Length: 221
Image 1 (cartoon, rainbow, N blue to C red):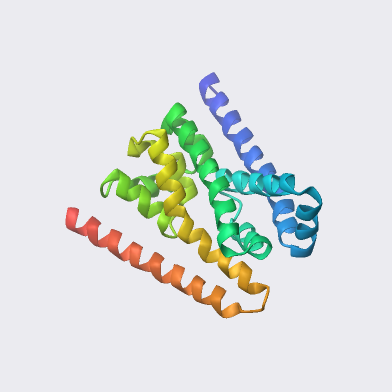
Image 2: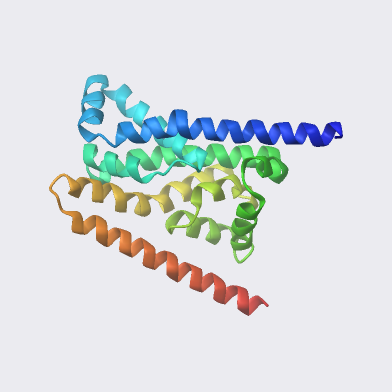
């Protein structure tokens, strides 16, 4: 086996091992922790401001990983802080995570990203990116239930400046996050209808987006 091929294989194995370790050693314990509202509430009250920062860093890691689901964090944040304040906290650190991914992707390029993500996953996101105005695509990814955390790594396609990227990401992500933090707040009073309704709404939006993108693709061909 050639040295270049061997080096690539070893690199891929190390990255795969890192992603697996990130999920099992960091992601799962984080999800278990935030999945216990009483324990999380006690932790935040004990630590004060530091507790909120640590929780925010959880959201930051979750956003950058793309393999750790964000829903438990958003629900827990809404449970602890209420819908609006919880959404602001999660949105802030999610935007920071997306911005870090944006900067790393811009620095190292697509060849580096191929080590982090399957080729077909990148290609699917790139297909959507190629369908329209870069800024509009950025807004759509952040606003709707699309793979926004994967998109962030490819965000350099938008050719946006860093301040523009941060502003669009923060504003466009907020409604999607608020939907879940508000649901988390309502869970406190056992109002499950809000959460179920939000989930149905998100599914409908996703289906509409898929149909629109398919229609655009047919028109271009």
